[in-house]
Image (cartoon, rainbow, N blue to C red; front, side, top):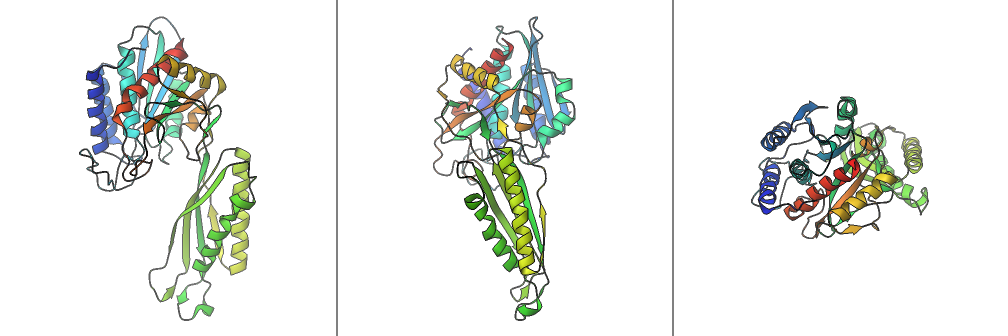
Length: 383
């Protein structure tokens, strides 16, 4: 794989910082998509827009081979107020690229530029720029809009930047990479009334408190210690006055697991606990667990192919990292086509440079490594 010259690296850095300064939320990536389309036009790469929403597929074809491969990057940002203080910080109040999707998008543009200039491959490479990864179902929407029928690809590959992993190092997992996950919502309905007359009420907040604590026993006492699972309640809302017992409370959170049977077991236990708490406090508890993201797990042949591409791109390789309990929309592609999803080190995670942190920033120094890996894995897949 040819090295990225300083001119292209500088160009990609400018593009990445433009995207960072102009983030857009899930399902609202209109300007981001327009920016990607303009850059593809500059590179002379044909593309199809508005796939499954604001999704874009850019296609490169050369040589006589009928082989095909897909590369994917996500484009959306998060509802977080940025505090990084960088000169190119978000200009959109309350929205920021706190997960590095600006860098993922730019990396794929860089890979497309490298591949267009490289005569040493034959076949078709589809670059998939996906909207709505952060809970918006962007992968499912693109698939439903005929992604794999309209743009045939035998395999698909992607990556996520990883704070705390040495910058430019690529981690390839043998199996699970990220967890299966579901959102949780509990609506606790009691009977409101005067705070000084609690005996005339059925307090949903007391029931919520017991439910919150009971849910914490699931991983500790219902899941095999050798398995991995997470149940987190992240928000609680109830009431509007200090002298009133509210009539209703809501709790929201997430559940994660690295095996589908464990995920099912956790869901059953959540529902059983909620039913027991409701009976104990004479309230109604409605549990909503909508369909979530499946397990992100690499296919064996594509996992090995990804590792070979890392070596071919002259990048450091790690094969010893444990999976993470975070979720990834890329899992939907892996249910349709074989593929692999890797991590590329973003460098130190100090000073709040963790994912989904208000101080996070993608490391522009890894753009050559990320673009180089994507280009190399596409070439290996076609070979």
